[in-house]
Image 1 (spheres, rainbow, N blue to C red):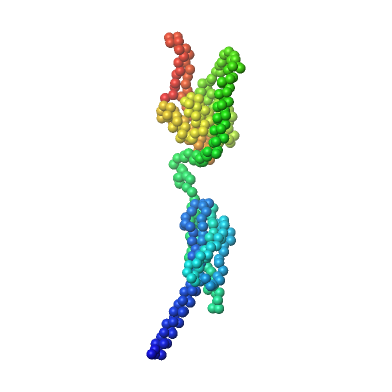
Image 2: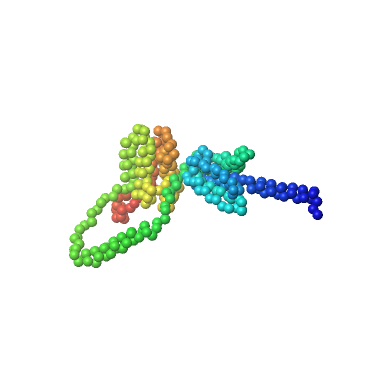
Length: 331
């Protein structure tokens, strides 16, 4: 027979189990997090708020508008999803698409939900959420040590759909040329004519004339320093094209100097004159450097001396050989 004390102990144990089950049903957890803790400016990531709660409770879900905190903007959301964790427990998740356009460290305050019952209002908080927004390092941190070339534009790959019209056009053009060559000879009789001889000036003659014209324009004296250096480098780059076959109008300074070396040009005093002018012009055009008047004159003299030192002089016909000889003054 069950004694009275044992019956009391059994009832007490059952009441304790009931209270523990009831407390477990009241357990509520709030979790917030970013997809990652570090992004670059303009990147888009997700920020999620998750609430685990008993299924029988009606708890208002927290909702953000426009921003999480200052400088973290909400692009879309929340997208709310509910899943069943256990028989009496559910998980409600709200997801936001966010971004930031200002670098720095940002901390999202704890998010909470409120449970109202006969005993009052209870709040359940999440932890802090931290996000670092970094800048893209496009240039070396110290640009005082030297001049860096401009990054070339990104070239997207060409698709077959884009080049197919050009392929068809090329086929039609080839067919048309073949037709003209095949049948045009019978219809058109060529007329005998002497080719027109166009005298070509020496490269240094053109360059020196343009340098004289640049000097007469007095650009830097009137405050147009950037235009002055643009014209000065264009004259030198055109001279390199006419004199050495270095097509440098679309090249950077380093590419121009490398191309000149590949022609057999030596790294001597003349090379240093050209390098000084091109680097000085880059400082003015791209680094907003404001040179003194003496620097402007020195760069002009260096350009003039470079053309004179590397010009290709035409020597008149020698009675002994009867041939025209070219004298190359470059080293």
